[in-house]
Length: 233
Length: 233
DNA sequence: GAAAGGAATACTGTATACAGTAGCCGTGTG
DNA sequence: CACACGGCTACTGTATACAGTATTCCTTTC
Image (cartoon, rainbow over the protein chains, first blue to last red):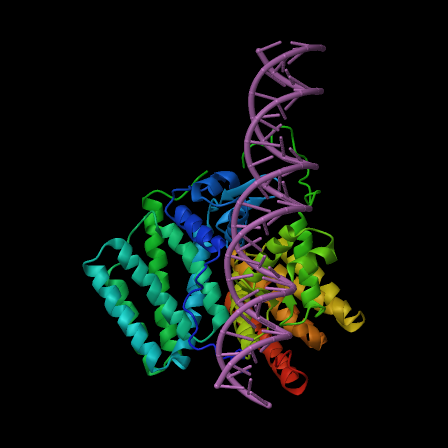
């Protein structure tokens, strides 16, 4: 590494204090979208959102741009921004990609994770398994996401991690209306994955993860067919 | 599909006529970056770019946002935008992800591609193999990119295609200074992949693609070590 | 002479204002 | 009564103006 920014930066500040408004707006809009307060297909009027959030149109525009790049909204030039309406089969595609990325992440993690990574995973597992048996559904879903994210980071591949994070968020959006966690069984599978990673067995870790994501996929597919599909437009 | 836009739209316009400035600015900046006219680490001053392109700061900002999301520039809040400087090992990570995505794409294509897809791939192959033996290096690189993109689209998974497109562009950026094509051997491999896809043999197509991307990876690694690495900062 | 502090500077972040255009409704006509 | 034309409305796209902040260089002091 080069030199530490001339005058010794000390510890990196965890978060920029005067957080850019576009960040706050982005978070707010993402929350409104994922909670379905802004339903798919909804026309997002810039002035309206700006007034609602108490800022000018500029930060709103920038946030919408970012949301567009990440697939949350569709931007029709000259007309406006609309909350993305999932295509038929898009959930299936997302789940397929997610399975692919996470399986590879597990394989890499088995060859890369150090003691700290393992410790972190075990801690998250403990929290998740508790949330699954007693806490609210929301907490369990969050814990599940945190666990998967930590595992992907342990792979050591930053590019893979960024892509997987994007995909994972969109997958969770589909799950939101179902609001269900596969529960204890899922966390048993997580535990076996950690073991394989810790033991340094890439193929086993990958196989377990492939199996795990496939089960999740099946669970979603059944719920999607039985219950209400997100959209038919 | 619904109704054809009331008054019969006829053929969909290939490109929006009053193209948003941000698009043009985005393209222009991307070109400047990929051609190294704006080298890694360069501080991108908004007013400067705006003056250079004859527009205001607004479209420039929006283009920079998008470039940031796609990993081309780093945005330091309160300070500005900088052309992304590749980390040590980032090329390796990108190539690994690319191999993963394209291998899966080949597998899916083998189970999804129709006659039109095959025809398109063969046409691109013909163009590419000609470019490789006679045309300029640039044409061969473009043909290669086109072929890979077409194959990924043939997989039928849009999400996968979008992700792969992003990764592929960044990979090509690394290749740009090397400005080399693996030539005829690479196109022989492409031909075999098409055959496997057409025959509907997923595993064979995947294996061939894995092999193909691995060779490309090796070629890059050797060139990277022997020649000049993109950056040392 | 080196280090610490402060002021100047230049850039980003945000807000406001103006222009252009796409969609929509009412009116008129066949 | 259906259809086409014209004006209207509302929104986006772009430009300009102002405020806040990080950086840098100069000055001062030990």
